[in-house]
Structures are given as C-alpha cells and as structure tokens.
Length: 136
Image (cartoon, rainbow, N blue to C red; front, side):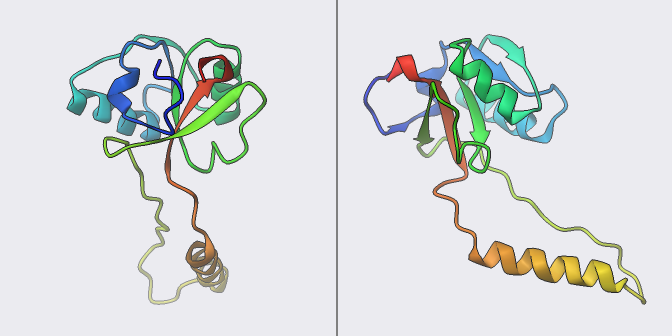
C-alpha cells in the first residue's frame, strides 16, 4: 500500500484485497471496467451495494474500496479517503422522464429541484478510494 501520498493511481492498489459491490451494480461494473483497462483483476474479499457497509468493511481492515464521492464524503472512523489520479472510474447520474405531451407537474417540479441542486453541488472529486486508517 503506498503510504503518505495524497493522490493514488488505481493500479497502485492492484495487489490489495478489495471490497466490491454487488456483481450487477452499476458502480461496480464501472470499477471492474477500470480494472480491466489497467490490466488487473484484484481479489474481492467481500461485496455489498450498501456504501456504509463497504466503508465499515474497510474500517475493519478487510480491504480497500473505490466508492463514489458522495459515499466517501463522511467516512467512518478507521477509514482514510484518498483521491484517485487519472485512471479513476467515474459515473454520471441523470434524470430520465417519459416524453409526454402532458408531463406531470410533480415530475417537472422534481426535475427543476434536482437541476437547481446539481448546479450548486460540487463534490471534491467523484472518484475516491477508501483505505483502512492503518494503511496511512
């Protein structure tokens, strides 16, 4: 485990035990694709689609994990969050609504609220790796 560096390359964690997501989860598919592009397949020790559970497994020292920035915004004790460098996976979240001649007022209001919130939201970075605190 690289110690002391602020930014990490995903490939620097290739030999670490990993906490994965559910095999069919969208985020975990993105992470697996990033591994393939870098030419490695890490050992998955445990998997969960619950980011709080993933971070708890990391805090317990079971492995490392790549989680979305929102999931890593408030890590639990025992977890160090580091930004990933250029080889980091990323995702985009979109609003999808039916194309309809008579859109529901509630749907229009929700899209307007989400758009307003998104304009004001700037996470530090969307690509974060959670490491056990003992690996600093």
